[in-house]
Length: 173
Image 1 (cartoon, rainbow, N blue to C red):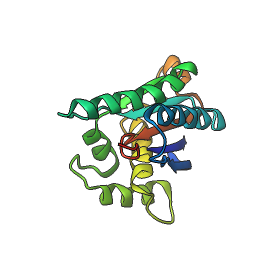
Image 2: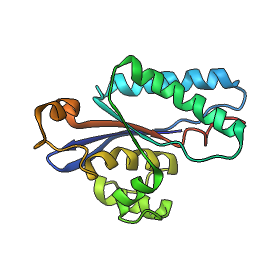
Image 3: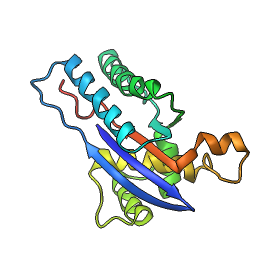
Image 4: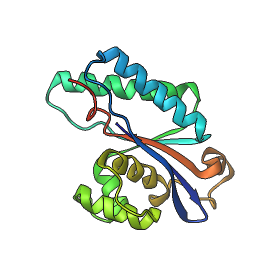
């Protein structure tokens, strides 16, 4: 699972932290969900996050995969719900289009664009790159705009977006 915290200030983007959570195959599924919940809580508390971005659920034909993905999203979103934070959900194609300009962009293209936008020395690992791209989508799509009405400004106060993406990639099957 990839996690990232992106800060937006005066049109400038900064990656505050990112993490790829890899869990031991020895953990059972419920223990994995607990670790995802706790990691989410730590990110939210450490960075005083004010809004959350998440990649929308992808279409899956396998019901077991859908169950796992739903459970993982539920564990992460439960931690968000306890903080009463606003959540903005984005489809993968919209995330890629926001960051690269093309919805069919490759992971490599997204990674290279993040190096430019976030002033990084090198590309992030894939899961962290997905999370950071998700975090940038809200401001790049105009969901964050200081010139909007007062309630909108309060919603995005402190300009920090916490994101997670690709949660099923690191779970033991």
